[in-house]
Length: 305
Image 1 (cartoon, helix red, strand yellow):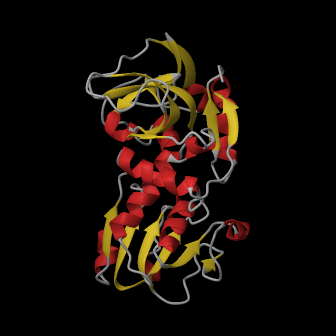
Image 2 (cartoon, rainbow, N blue to C red):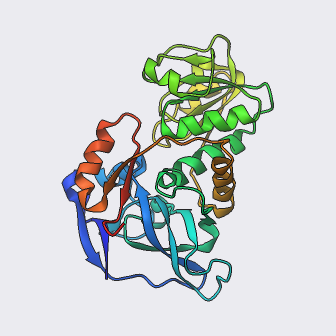
């Protein structure tokens, strides 16, 4: 038996219960991972409140997208992750119904990345979902060096990583943030726009929207709009008037991409903010902290740590 944070029905924070559940055995291509840390994301809140229902499974759900932990077992088809290996993974909860807020989790090998021994695992529990979202967003728009890109929500967890990844490509980054004080926390210079609703100094080629809104007015005619918040997008009709294209990103599991992100963190080329760490038994307090903190930077650890 193990402990897991379960959602028995949509509702408030009180609908999350710490329960004893059966250990899951890994399938042939899966890895059993003992949790070191996991984290809270806005997507978890959407599922908790009923705004989103996972495409598979039924209540009670174990929530959670992120996981850093230690391999404690593998299926017969997995030969390259021996017991004791530290790993990092994302579970696409909204697609699979399989969450990570548990003492042990079984996940497909293809979505698992090794974690270098010299890295502190706890802060990296914030990397999987936000990191893969940022990585896949930048890869999707594939801007050329010198392209003008507006990142809406640049001060948030996803936006900060999008900005860093774009700058590595030589892109001219415009950041749109909710609060002026967020500007100093971003690795950009005079291109930051400190107030929502303010336009860039000139039209941009691409908008990457990590905030959820309609920032299409910033685009040059023929520009591209990539939304990272699926339920908050400008309508196709609005965009069509100026020949603007729109796409939405649904983040996919990828151990290979996670490994690239971990290497960037190890090399100091990608930075993460220091999280607030709380035990899983204090999940209600952790959610209150998460919803109060504008940066939404909260990590949960099992009590045995």
